[in-house]
Length: 110
Image (cartoon, rainbow, N blue to C red):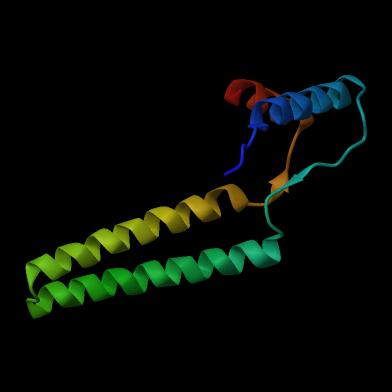
């Protein structure tokens, strides 16, 4: 239906060069990465509470002797939830970011 051009390589090259030039010029840019701590840490606490509740539900289901096939499916869904939730929260942690580190990370990825 339509043609779409990949722009990730040129964009990565642009960002790497931009940060390399800022680092060379010793610019006074303040880099911040991630989500604001007032949003990030409550999300981490809610995620941890959900993990604890999920673990308690799995233990309770095993103690009650529920059907193993349904239990296996629930554990697989729980593992996927943990994996996806953890992957969402991990890069969102807030903090300062160095332009040299950012340029190096882009170079390593590209």
